[in-house]
Length: 85
Image 1 (tube, rainbow, N blue to C red):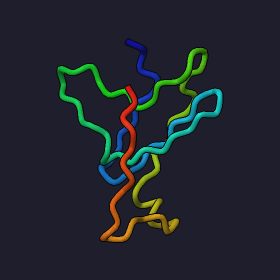
Image 2 (cartoon, rainbow, N blue to C red; image 1 turned 180 degrees about the vertical axis):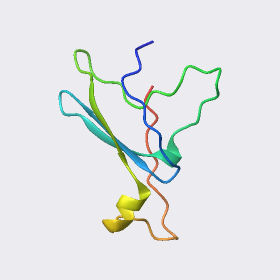
Image 3 (cartoon, helix red, strand yellow; image 1 turned 90 degrees about the vertical axis):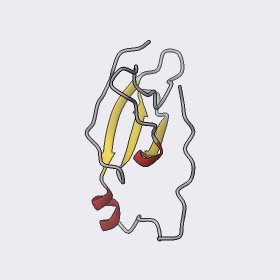
Image 4 (spheres, helix red, strand yellow; image 1 turned 30 degrees about the vertical axis):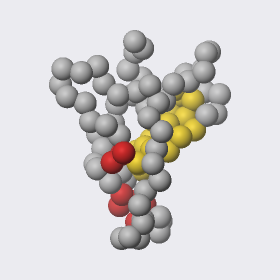
């Protein structure tokens, strides 16, 4: 079990971008992340390679995505995100 490296308050329609020191970057739609109860050990979103570590986590708000024209059409489904453990 690793240490918590970052925590963000997010809304259901937000995205997260996670970047490692070696440049691996992923963008995750918050609505695809499993929620964890109070008694659980949390949810891993990325597993860096040996010697690598999470360097940055950014929240991209749904409002910012709409301003940039990146919102999905009503009938489009988000691409499923892999669950990294």
